[in-house]
Image 1 (cartoon, rainbow, N blue to C red):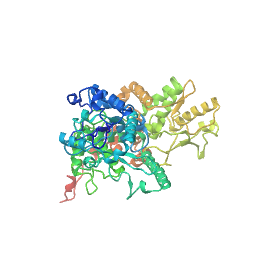
Image 2 (cartoon, one colour):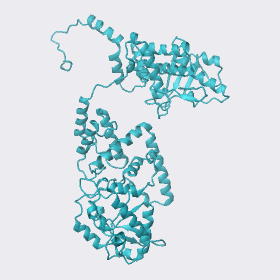
Image 3 (tube, one colour):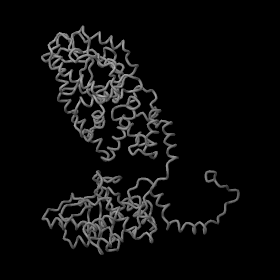
Image 4 (cartoon, rainbow, N blue to C red):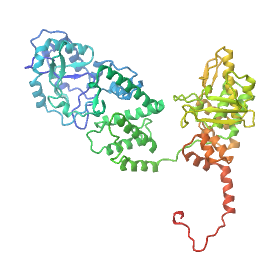
Length: 604
């Protein structure tokens, strides 16, 4: 409670920031209250010992004291007292680099990590005898009202000092008042007096709120507002540079890092550690064996390196050096060897099986001939289009948050050399189109403005051009039926239900259709349906080109692959290619060397 300067100073604590006072272990919220040190006697006799008239603050302290004694743990007391915080429940969803950090503060409070040993009882008694700053003597009435307001707002807790002075990890700071010009005085807690500030780890880098050597506090109001606006715009641009799913995964990695550091009482920014690599390695090991992984199961080496990469990138965003790198700008040797060790123990990667075109033909015949419905036709059309254009699921289905699926305006049909207009050209010209192009806008690994094209395959059903025409006409007929203007922003991979509501074609529907038809054709193809999914169409189209002896560079161009990894996999899986190899090796294996010539050592 508050009292004159020569009286004992009551201990106060924020209702959402537990005080921590040890070098290695934080005070757990589950810590039982030390009822043996509770004050005895009636409530009034316990702390109504001051020369001031009993007021609102006394009543509030009495309520808090009774609640404190009736709860089983410090955490229960805090949760019962603080109520709902001011932060929005969905703070984690805002588009801001600190959203995940604010969300964590909302759930578990703001960490106060203290170095040094806990205060001794004699030091606590000395701090209480010292009391508040002399400045508080001139504003007792103001302070009592201020504290009562803050208690009612669930921002602070005031308890009798004798009730909590034996609490483990307790630290005290003297109260004071700072005079203000033309406004009421400002209440402070002087955390510098008993070295509380000096003993507290700075968990945020000093550069976090600085831009060069100048802070926003030195700017004029207009300049600062413009600067903040530009800063928010830049932050949004940084976040939009990757997909939402990718951003969420990175944010989750950082949350796991904070939880790991909190559990070990480690400064999350490692500012007090001259060698942060061992801490990173332990984090990597725990993530690897599943203790820190979101799934709770062991993960592959690439997943571990991605998690540590997220942590390092967050350091960089907040203005600190990436702790993964050494002074030469390379991944630390110990971390690199740890990644390599994990990689050696990884199981072989499970790649998708390429989908043979027989399954595509079966799906088209079923949807367009034997049992036609708009939903089946749309699904079969997209299966065909994805096969021929070697598309990823996010490029031809409406299931990802990336919003990468092709729109109607991304599709262009040609009749010979003449370009057709999807809206204005008559239907008979649209249906007679001889080629089609797809324009890449936001698709993965597709440069903006990149166009891929196909002509007719020679089959009326299994053809990229006729499948595109059928899918386009689904939308055009619906526009006419409902007397709606043509809308090129509509996603190509969609259809309309019985209530004329547009429904996106989902990857799960593609996978289900592919596996159903593959199960019927398993005696022919020899492929287990469980090994196929919506991702198999891309590999299936590439495999068809490879089996047709298409040039490797052409395949990579159509599939938009920037590396040779997938091509190596397809070569290993292609039976037609390997069927020809043994005969070539047999017929050409008789060779001779010039006299005294040796096989180069590198070839041995």
